Length: 367
Image (tube, rainbow, N blue to C red):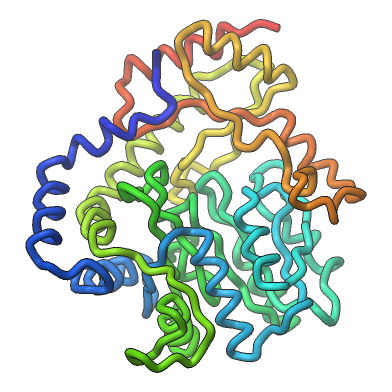
């Protein structure tokens, strides 16, 4: 069976370094907000070309805390609106509603899966305060258009980079393309910890200072609390793991792109619609997502041929029970995507023979 993603094998490559990093943390006697977190924050900020990085507990918290900080700073108030792509993973939307803000769902571009800039302005009104764009599946959104629109209306731009670590847009890394960005380091991400972890990147000193306090019970100084904060801190152990793996992120990304190039070149089945890609560094292929009108049959066929696949995501957010407030909303582009998308295996440890097998199986599928 060809794994969809072999995390055990990925981490085994760096086993000795990870053990050494864990030993360093154990022997330090300091396990929360210590040197490992400080060093990782500095290294990841440098990698993302931003002034600041704040380690938090997970990717959802990263987005929640960005919006919460803007509320504390007086940039937003409860009831304000945030534009967000309709086909994103539900976490992007949860971060908005968790802060008492209103998610405004906008259809994606059907060729890139990302937020369609051409549809944004029709959703802007006097309560709109931000655009939360998602670099879905690892491909950068068209940020020039989004930043131009945001500048015209005085909106904040927040990047959800949970799937796009290291992607480039006109020479700049994701995480530096807006006012702030949230990252997830969930184990299955391109830069994955060995547990839950996340971070915020920004070059706004006031925002960084506010989030730094909010993540630590609202405390800017021990036993002094500016805000009613939360406990959302990247721990020393996960920071140490991430410091090891950050060194290998770019090389792993190149392997993902190599697999994607083969898929795009050698998959020739006319019933399978391949993702758009310019062939450059704008896509890091966290996922290789294809579309087919016969998804259930296709997935079953691949399973029978020893190939694991995953559907990202079978139910759109506006159809989830958690968001019954959107039950009357019609979003045909998003709905069609969620009915047709399926993700093929893509993994930096994939052998060429495994890639061969996936291509042969996909090309052999016949409805």
